[in-house]
Image 1 (spheres, one colour):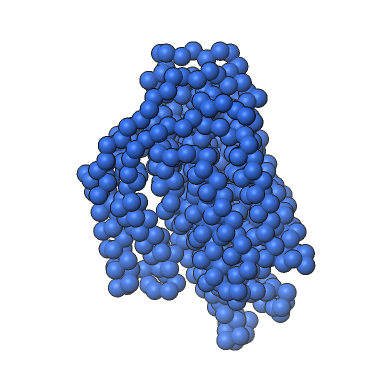
Image 2 (cartoon, rainbow, N blue to C red):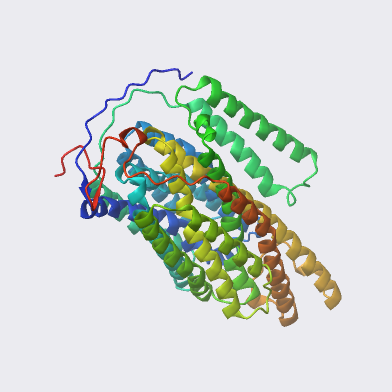
Length: 535
């Protein structure tokens, strides 16, 4: 199987890096993170046009999003484990190559099936980028200083989220069309690859170990089966049906087999189960699942709301996202710097989730007639809350584990957050399609219009609809999106409860527990430097 002895060569602690040296090494990582975020945000405002052009449905819309999330979710733990065993720089560059291949295929996709398959390949690459960037930063910067650099990650996340929809909207409205959206990220991916090659220099820790291929395969298979069930149930088949019974039974059986392998057989498990014995890891993971449902599941449909309920163009819908991302940008940078200065972090997690709950509750009241300034305020509240919560959950976990488990622990948080996002997108997409379909059937009957010419499950071209039918669709869609936010509020409350029970521990000023009593970093320096000489 994979019983193998592991040997690690321990090297003496290297001298400290200056802030400038860290930022040089960080530049390529931030560019890689920008690529990962851009992959989803740049296509957000293009999705309604894509689905219409390729003759897809609301189910197809959901699957274009879920395919990437599913692949990212299923492969994140494997990327994290590989980071504990192999050259992290090479892994990040490999993820960039995989992302590039997926983007090229997506740009040339002739059908929804090919596009969804290409999005799976993109998701594998994005899973590597999102997991590995956090891991590499954790190997360079102590938890106390990491809050400062987490702020930069939050800023990049915000810039990608702001610029992505705007760039995507402009590209969709240009002669390039929606296919141009998949070409946009390629120059950034190439630039990230080259910058990483020049600036990222990490110590090479030689370890002889076998990858837990069996555990990884079972985890990927089990999660995929359950997410496929969640995505299709209620649309392709009934929730209570023989197909549901088969998929749920198969998914749970494979997941249980994965747990057995990780606990009893694997010598180098992809997800070390002993991590969950730590209270902070267990509670932060729980909160991450709930945050994923609230964040991914609800916000992914805002672009549809602005285009299909408010009649906006893709570019105008992109401009509306500035409200949420502006809040996220300010919150992530400010809280990151304050946490690095004070060492206290729990109050910002609690306050952030309170803002998320308030924002989601207010968004649950929107419909096709809600004044846009109020919608913007509600979105800003959600952004402020997510900026204080998202990165700091990872920081709390990294502060509680040893350095040799940093990759696995970081990827576990990202893994479960992605699971929450995948489930949220899938379930809420099914709810949205069902509610819009029911509202359209009822409205068309009241108008005395035949349903045969209007497929209630399809995403229409609003400009081609008669005035009364268009008004009916906008009203149905606007009301249904409001209901989605109402569904996410309980999950955000559960996340707040989990965060409230996390016990705050002072942030370490060194990279590892074992070195806490051995090292005292000089003021203004970070307790890490590359072991190999820079050119």
